[in-house]
Image (cartoon, rainbow, N blue to C red):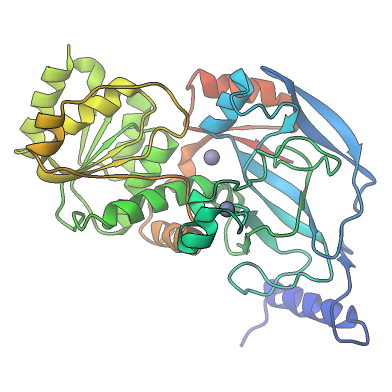
Length: 403
Ligand SMILES: [Zn+2]
Ligand SMILES: [Zn+2]
């Protein structure tokens, strides 16, 4: 077998980690030799509403159960923008950013594998998933549904404390004990920054599959072509679903939906009311969609979508990660008479991550232009601007990149 650079790198890493074993055979704390870790590093601290300031702190020593990550990049999520605008989660001061990825530069002696058992060490690229508490009623009674943990933590939504490096919007991140993380060395930076939103989509599709209503020839309607809606589309495309109808009010997003394989795109702004829109959906689908994914945060849209689904069809609500208000539906027409099977989808389970990594590899395999979802990149000191771009919906996925 031909030895390439990657092989040499991994052999060197292995030798270094073997040398770094103490007499009991356990690995001692190792530090990257190829890059000097500075004494201090910068983070983007949300100090007050709409005010991110770059601050510099000393990087604390890590414990035997912690890792220090040099951040390479992190996507900006709708949740970050909500927190930035109004602090609904009361986290200020906080370093946001939960869609990040980076390289392990320092690793505690008790860590040698990722959450699915892959060996990890200095130089490996990783992403973090959630930190379920393991102690609440839901964790104890439904351990396979850790997304429903009542106290789940996630880097980027941990208020500032003495660790300082709690979010991916910084130069470094400290990963603490009890976290879940995955080695993703085979993926480029853009793909790695899309893993977290892709996991949201994968979980939604897994929930949709529990209805038994998704198959190759299903007519699937996706309402809302932001990053999540587009990612849901990509997931069902990799499953072989071809008959996809995308609904949005933005031409750029609908164009992207086309590129990801939507058969029909519908711009709701071209219809004077929801009745006209409903007629257009009927025209495309015949009796209505077999299944629909609601991926907008707009109450009226969440109400309308019920009328796009055919009798006996299914619906997955993905769009309301924050409370955007109520909407009304008609229980007779929308639920009872049509026997719609509806499921909700909340974030993702830790076990959705390995599925997500496979999905992204498969998406690449069938040439879906997934990484084109990232339309803008900003450095750390331009994150206020990045948030602004996101609020204006000027692009699709905006990201912080640590160059
Ligand atoms: Zn997110
Ligand atoms: Zn819990």
